[in-house]
Image 1: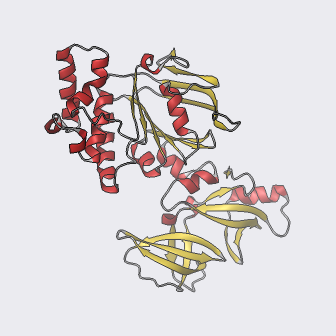
Image 2: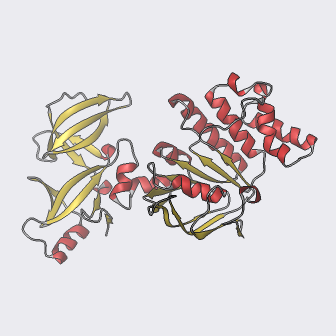
Image 3: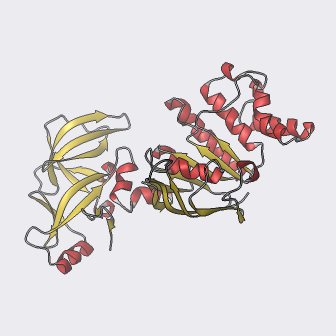
Length: 365
């Protein structure tokens, strides 16, 4: 095993001036499962390919286990990679696919067979060793690709969206298998995905990328609950975080004509800024599961109107209109509501997050 040290990597897309990665620095600890998460075009796969040696940076450096590998070819970096498209050889049986890298390194036959048997057993592929990939399911083919990677005893395991070609049920099953396998191996892993559920469930830490930069790095629960900027809150979570335009004035948060108590740090900021009569504008973020219903007409909540009711089985998801702004509210499945019905909402004050409307950056005490 080895750590990965990425320092100030710049990479420009071929033939253009747009940066694929913009001054990216990241340290992956030895044995850590790090996930690069972000939308298409954010630079996460380019960053992974530079670690792999498939692309070279314009500036910056990459060290694996303390060794500078920035310009070394892939075969000299002692790493393995699992691709999105399986990349198994259709004309080779499973046994030969798993053994391919070992055979290229001219590993002795007895050692090769021992490692293939070990990986096949770990990934539940032993009954399929003499089959061709066309005789396997998508999940089995992806397990072949993972087996081929782990037999190499590499310092680092790289994965580029390995579950994206699987259907929903297979993805769920294989995600759990993959986490167990990586925990068993203890291999330093860098994993790329645009799926925030994968990132949350698999990672020790997650690096959220946007426009070639890492905009937040941390434990997945911390990133979920305390987004550093509006983009992160809106990208992570299903449904994503709700955002409401509000204003702070006189110790209150004003959402349209409705009021709720403002946190002390916002009240102080509004006072310091000398906010005009309209108050200091803020963007308020709250997740659907942190909003509860209270008795209508009691004056204890924010009055809203139900637009859409979506039963999910374990819960019900409401889309409501609050002063002309839409938000999602998750309520217990036992709650029965109809469109156009009025409700009173109580956001959990401890779960409220606030952002600067201009910079989109988080505000905190």
